[in-house]
Length: 553
Image (tube, rainbow, N blue to C red; front, side, top):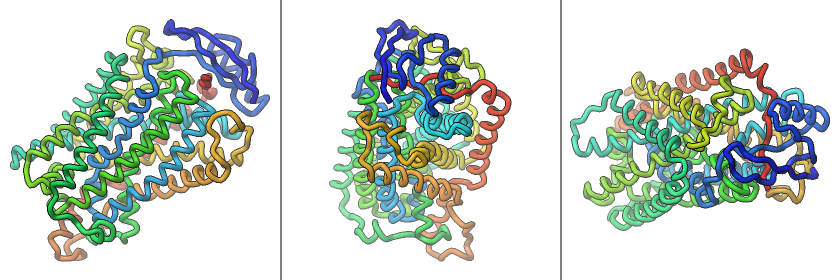
């Protein structure tokens, strides 16, 4: 590829920037329909898309702001704390080995994403890469389905993030009022309040987000250090390594290996938003260099904090039965109470978590709105004229935000009908996100990582064997994780098949509160059906692939 340079004014009145195209002079017409036609002609001629773009957003995020936004979306130690109720019922072994498995897996994912974004910096991320890399006959439909799945993956990630707030808040309520009986509408209100907060901040506080993300990042790291140090220092009776690394339960009815794989849902959902920085490139300068660094930096810090947090919590548990039977569904509160032997420490720590979680939701909703804006602009969603519009004063895709607000409201209604809603949403989000990671990795392997698609001297190209391992690891984990996350948390245990131990019965009871296989299958299947219907009745006629793929130098 021999890049040429173009420049054009963005529609927000900002200074023009240098833009790179794969062929000089291909994109000479400012009309978006003409651009689309030229890209399609170039695809027919060369087999690859041309790349260029206009600037649509003011560059409000610097490197630190982008990195902080990416970290806040993952904030792995915090998310694992909120989802620990998924893995702990299978015993300490499933939780400890789960994080050990996930860290190298997401190293593969992070390297794959960083390499692709350094060569093809694009807001659409996975679905734009699919358009570039897929065979001509399936390029359009593969790109569309990848984009649609990625869009819903981020919607469900935002929904999962909103749901975590209620869990943490209820732990404080239960401590203050042990006789409190949670009602379905309580969970609904906690959820919707978080949605409205994140929506308002994205709509009216766009200029403040970079500073907010940076400040919350510092608070998150400081909190992690303090929480870990205080928990270990105050715990007088620590668990043995044998318990932490080899202890499992039999109440679920699954073999130990299957339990570990099912429990991967907790650390997986923590790392799933690792591509968040990729979808914010419209908001930063020099994304070819900045975004890959932000992805890798967020992964490194997220991995370190998640591993240390999990181990510090597991070694500090005195009574697993009490932790798992906590009515709030937020095990860290009980662990901190056992470690400190007081109520003050868990109250303060949980209050800090409640302050941190909504900002992660805000960052996640920001990415979701960017995905909506990008798909609509490419003709994949109806009401393109509105959804692809950027409000010049607010510097935000207003209609895209309102659509996401409506969809998140509908998802929140599930809390009114099912106690399984939160854990099911977590599983669905992880499944959809892993599928989108798999597609570009598989296409790179299909091209045999050729210099035609990963040109030498352009971007962060991984050394030969490292790239192959990263891509293969990403694909392999997708097949394993998506199948395991459809498994029920327990094989319908009853009193006749379980041991008589009260502890095991409690573990099985908690396990049965987990994800519902049928529910997850229905949701994922419904999303695929919805995507297919949208393709048949709208996108098939209007989606010609990405209008333009951003490649800033």
